[in-house]
Image (cartoon, rainbow, N blue to C red; front, top):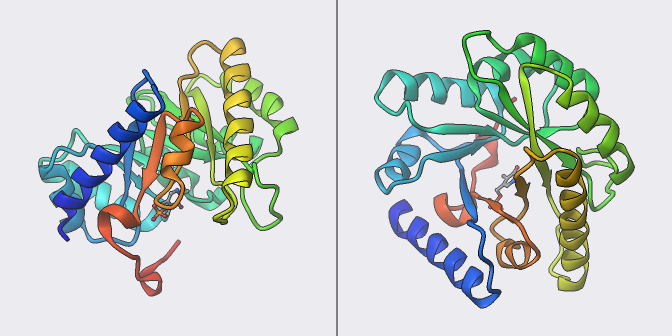
Length: 234
Ligand SMILES: *Cc1c(COP(=O)(O)O)cnc(C)c1O
């Protein structure tokens, strides 16, 4: 299947899911292009896609530089991967959004390193909703302190929450995690009215995430095919 056909399938599934669950808000689709060549991004772009997610700073910045120099400057780039301190400058200088902020130090560095001529960097807090030791993200209790800190930084704009659910086919567990995220999101929104993004749902759990209130899904495999992990880099 082609990227264009896959993209249309995913968009139709999102609409079907919204209709079935009587969801009135829009669901934003991030095409997750990590490890994929720019030609795949270009094909999705031709099919109308403008929002792309990337996880590996070095690889992503090369693609972003290429895009800006070759007529794709209206793409919006979302950093969705684990973020190390030594990569924050590259990310602050290239991306429109960081979906995976999970500590004060990273927020402070992104703020300090965001170039003055660029718009404030949109930031979501990643929540480790499945409480897995190896997974990035803050605990539910830590959200408020980090949100308060991010909202005090002038070069960052707090926009919402992101989560990766447990890798399971158990719908009850997934529903519990997504529903908890939705409730955390509505609480955060009460305190910070600019908060408008609840990013959850990937290829395996997209429908369930939307039915629980997600307004942004991050889809890689279903659009671009399986990833070849030997190509991955930091
Ligand atoms: C890779 C990745 C995705 C996309 O996953 P698929 O299962 O390929 O749709 C979404 N979110 C994050 C944080 C990722 O790292």
